[in-house]
Every structure is written in C-alpha cells, then in structure tokens.
Amino acid sequence: MRDFQAELQQRRQDGLYRKRRLIDGPQQPRLSADGQPQLAFCSNDYLGLASHPRVRQQLIDAVAEQGVGGGSSHLICGHHQAHHELEQRLARFTGRSAALLFSTGYMANLGVISALAGRGDTIFSDRLNHASIVDGAILSRAKVHRYPHNDLEWLAPRLAQTPGHKLVVTDGVFSMDGDLAPLRELAGLCRTYNALLMVDDAHGIGVLGRHGGGLVDQLGLSEQEVPLLMGTLGKALGTGGAFVAGPELLIDYLVQKARSYIYTTAMPPALASATCASLDLVAREPERREHVLALVRRFRAGATALGYQLLPSATPIQPILVGDNQTALELSARLEARGILVGAIRPPTVPAGEARLRVTLTASHTEADVQRLLDALAEVRP
Ligand SMILES: *Cc1c(COP(=O)(O)O)cnc(C)c1O
Image (cartoon, rainbow, N blue to C red; front, side, top):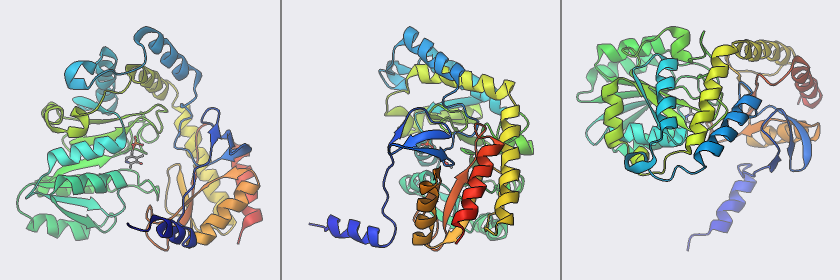
C-alpha cells in the first residue's frame, strides 16, 4: 500500500503541512482561534455581512417559515420560491438576463465549464485561476491551455490559430494576488476570435464597481461582452453558495447540462432568503465598499513604508510576498503570538518560491485595527 505516513512526514519537512484552527463565535475581525483571542486579517467576509444582524434575522425568519433542508435537487422538487427570487435579484444586480444558483463556487465552476466545453473543444485558462476552474477544465475533457498570467500577447495568436469551440476563462479579481484581469481587452479578443468568455468574480462581487456588481460593473461590461459571469455568495455577500449569470439561452442550457447543478440537493432555501438581505445591504450601504477600500490604501502605504514587498493590488486582498515556505510560516506564527491572525499561503495554492502572507481587509475592520497590524508587522520584520 502507498505510504501515506511518509508522504505526510515529507509535507511537514517541506513546510507544506496544513492544519486547521478551531474558530469559535461569529466570523468577524475579533475572534477566538484555538481558544486564543485574535484580530483576524484572513477572512473573505469583505463587507462584514457574515454576522450582520439583518442577514442573521432574515435567515432565522426564513427557517421559521420554510424549515431547514432543501429536501431535493432543483429538477425534482427542491426548486423553492426563495431560490427563484434570489436568481431574479442576482440577474438584476449584475445587469444580466438570468442567473442560476449553485451550492458552492467550486461546484459552479465544475458544472459550468464541464457543461460548456467537451472533447474536441479548447479551453484557455489563466495560469493563476482558482483551483475549481482548473478542476472544471480537467473534468470537461477539452484540450486545456493554461496561459501566462494576464498575457494577451500570448493568447491572441493562439486563439486565432485554434479551430472549433473555444472557451476563455479567468478570475476577475485573482484570489491569491488581488490583481485584476484585463477584461475589456479579453472581451475584445473573444469577440474577434469567436470564443466564449467566462469570468469568475468571486472576490469582486459586492466589493468593486459603483453598485458593488464587481469587476464587470467597475468596467461597465455588458452581457454581450462577458456572457458568463460567475460569482460566489460566501465571500462579500456573507452567506454561502454561488451563481452564474448570463443570457437566458446559456442559463437554460446549464439547467439541462451542468451535472453539479442537477445531481445535488438544492441549497437550503432560507440561505437564499438571507442572501437577499445581503443584496439589500450592498445596495443601501455603499459606505461599506468605500470603507474597506480606504483601509486598503492605508495598509498599503504603511506596509510599503516598513519595507514589505506588496503586489500591485487595489482590492481587499493584500499579499505580502515572502518567498520560501518556512519564512512565511514563521512570520505568520510570530504575528499570531502577538494576537494577529494572517494566513501563510504556500504551494500548491501559489507557485513554488512565492509563499506569502495573505492579508485581507474587511469593512468590519477599523483604522485602529489596521494600525495594530502595521505595528505588529514592524515588530516581526525579518
Ligand atoms: C472562493 C472561490 C471559489 C469557490 O467558491 P466557494 O463558494 O467557496 O466554493 C471559486 N473561485 C474563486 C476565484 C474563489 O476565490
């Protein structure tokens, strides 16, 4: 039998072993991790909605009315009025014709990519795309090119030379770097070479754009330009699940073909109701977006002044590039000893030699919190 024990031991030696901290209480900057109070800079709850009183109350009320479980898949008898309402709200929110709910973002990417591309087709996927996109592309059995990050000069001639059906897929905001895809230019290329464009904006939805509609909102890109927009509900919207928005035709096709939509139990309808409360807050409280982006500017100025190497990111994802795995782990441990929780991100999540501390800021952080982080970073500076 394969020596699992030896493989785990090797992982420990390489600084790649992962352990889970036990969190107690709601997801918010001040939390208890393994029994210790910490100020956390590692959640994706960018707008501070995961424990917002109105979102909580909506969930409680909806559970009281509708119960808990989804009971069945959408195509049998699990497609509830609450799911339908959320889909309509998400379509309006993103300026698309229709939207389809999935239970998680991982499942959305698996289902959409494997439904829309198949044997004989070609997928072009940014090298820094999320793991769920990588896995969806493998599952599709299409030929896959992982192109150099945001490299349109690499992409254009390959799109021109490739016959048959082509799908280009990219993160909107890249999850480990925080930078943005050049969507307007990608949309132009896809139009020219007749490729279908899919954008996973898990980290942009709720945060970027005048209305919080994400990177397509910020850039003013229509459904014609970006036909497939995927977003998740467990990050800025503070609940859980995911959606794909686009033209009626594609959404209908996905209802027929996306296996991770068809062969799974519908998300609890109450969670869909709670997400509607999140969308209300995104619309009514633009100050949440403004606040988190102001904290981003403050953090960048402070960390740069301390001599830390940041990546070119204007989003709440603010990686500090460290390099080797052990140094990243050490820095993270020294911060934790000072009551500051920041994730150390190592391969295979990022390329080898690019281990980093991934700082994320949220609307629940205060300026004083960011100052505490900067003070701690000054103390542990290598
Ligand atoms: C988090 C994330 C996902 C997965 O979403 P879940 O709802 O957490 O499964 C997909 N794509 C990107 C870019 C993500 O950051």
